[in-house]
Length: 397
Figure 1 (cartoon, rainbow, N blue to C red):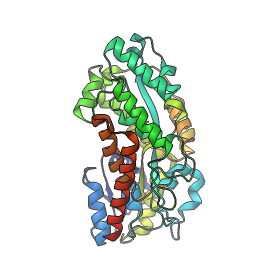
Figure 2: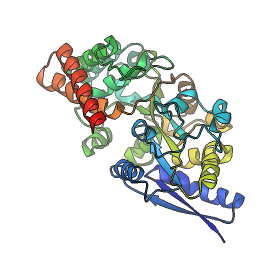
Figure 3: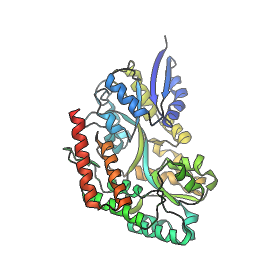
Figure 4: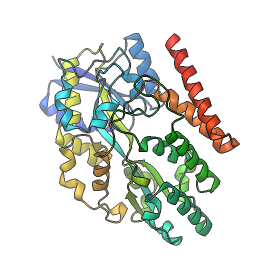
């Protein structure tokens, strides 16, 4: 009798599952995969509720970098480092930062990485050239980045970036080392009054004061139109943005874009995808087989990269000749090599179950700084107190 393996995912990660169906079916012809996909806005709540109730759970559960810190703490997920999974035997085959992101505060491995999001800077060469600017004007330093944006705006009326908050998002991660946390240390202490947050807020404030950001949120219609109407000249995001730019945001701008490393030597992960096995899964052994196929089969990793721009987590897949190919959208630049280099220099930062809480509070305080002139030290002090208060409430619930 055929076995049924249930997989819960979300767009666009679910497309990689669809890519895997044929290859996995050749290895396991008796297995039928039933894929359910929820909108990203609904997925975290649905999975959190299912884990808490121990019901309506799939055999294989997707998660991304934004929600993994929260879901990894659930007692409803298997520790993949333990038998019968033994995932750590494959630790040398994937970047350390991706495994670190999937660890819970208890040290368990809640999920296994299937793709990565090395951070990169994407920019319009033609718009920069109109202001006499080049790549190094954006990448040498953050102060230089802001100065270049000011010159670009003065000479062309074009904004350098969509939102000043992008600078904050990168800078707070730019000086971390393996084992550090972004918002919390190993004892759960809140870190948002550290100098890197002061500097990050100061840079975002300087960018806003210089008038170089369009004040639009990523993925909004205004953000998309900003690129299409030549109003925004750059964007810092995961390498996968290159596929979105090429495929649907601005395909008509082929040859006008380039990719570069993030400013001031920063390296950070911007997204990434993982799969976990709930403790209530009915087919745990088969679930782990499927995750291993998604994550550790080189052909599958490359198929997902070629069709979905899902940057491989498997290090051996990163040696594929495909990485050396020139990309027409980037005027022949071999940008995949750039992203590969970045992926190998990202620190293995520890995730925390309250990272999502901290992100909300910090962003709200930055908004107060940018829109209402709130002093940065006061904003960060209030952010620390707000995070501590929300953590206490959750712990007492």
